[in-house]
Length: 378
Image 1 (cartoon, helix red, strand yellow):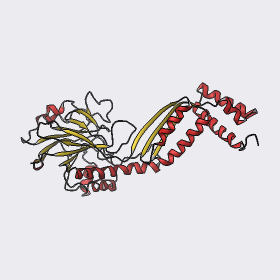
Image 2 (cartoon, helix red, strand yellow):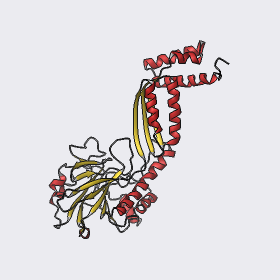
Image 3 (tube, one colour):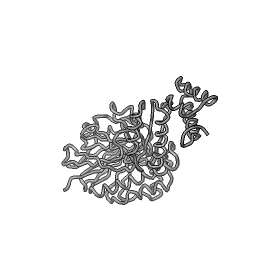
Image 4 (cartoon, helix red, strand yellow):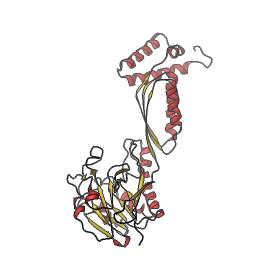
């Protein structure tokens, strides 16, 4: 008998809304989550895995539409083997839940196994059993995997655990929900592998315990999200061989720069020029720049907005400090000169500095447009 091979994934959060983005960006980002599941199905088929382990938060909320429920199960079609779906904190197996609705809709294919209650799912014909610890409410304060330790299973079969929550002492401050899981659970329960969800990045807890992360990034964290895990185990008791498989479309990146001199602006613009249509960027700028540098930045950000999937920029920490040559070139005297001086002073004192910076940039742009091509005043 060929020993099993698995694809471990979690935190699909189908139906998620991206309210912090404009609709033009929010809709494609939500659609990308369906596409990621379709890619997982193709990966499962390509790598000939014996089961796909989905460790919770398949749906983002209990209230997703019937259409969303049906679309999700349709997205699994490319892999005909077993899918084991575990409810997480976003889609807990309540008495009335998205799962009970999916069953009423007859949307769940025969090869999809919903682990709606704690128990052992027997896949002896494929060489393993799955010990499932679904969440039956959003938050729990006891370890739902504790029963794994005493669970009896047939000899010769791999013992695979599925759970969703926070490994104690390691991720307690970073995880989405309480739902504690003992750090030594895999060893205590004699598990060959423990597939976890709730942490949105890939993370190894120990040789037998892993978070797969979300298959499509959804936040600006460098936590190795956007992939699934291929898990191979040579024999019961053998250490799993785990490798990451890319599954995402969009690349979420956070860029934070402190600008002080012209070369800082040059370096930033070179970095921004590498971004493409599959990038979702968060740009945070601090420091200072003169009028020429500010114009270059404004031009680059405008071009970037048209080139990437989305860019969110925070320039509140960037001060616009025109040089004396900048001021002289604007030929602003009298009242306009006094306004420019006042705006420069407000920036220096930090009094509504971001408003003063934007006003100064607008005024400088207006004055620059008044300058004839050959110089001088009109």
